[in-house]
Image (cartoon, rainbow, N blue to C red; front, side, top):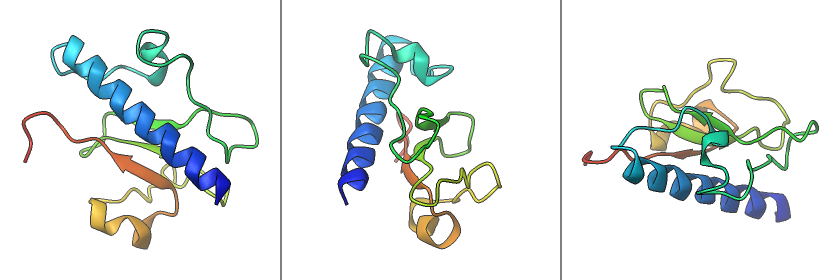
Amino acid sequence: MHFNCIVHRRLAAAVVAIRLYQIDHNNIFPPELSALVPRYLPAVLADPYSAADAPIGFAQDAPMPYVYSISTNGVDDTLAGLIPRARDDQDARCPDFIMFLDLPGRK
């Protein structure tokens, strides 16, 4: 439960930082999370479930962009193509923790 709280806080911080970046850069996504440091985040946020201390993931080129954590299984399931197509589809297709990014102007 403790790591789940950490993951959700870090993903939420990344979402806010990405949106602030977009506001300052004509609504484009940063090329990678490291572009948010140091102006929007103090450091690239580590994924607490990664044994190698890897950063949280960022899929800015996905049809519905998102940030994610590899979750309790320690495997990046998004690399295996188990990417959810929508918010309501997440648990059925991909065990990774995912926060979708709302695109400006999208309803």
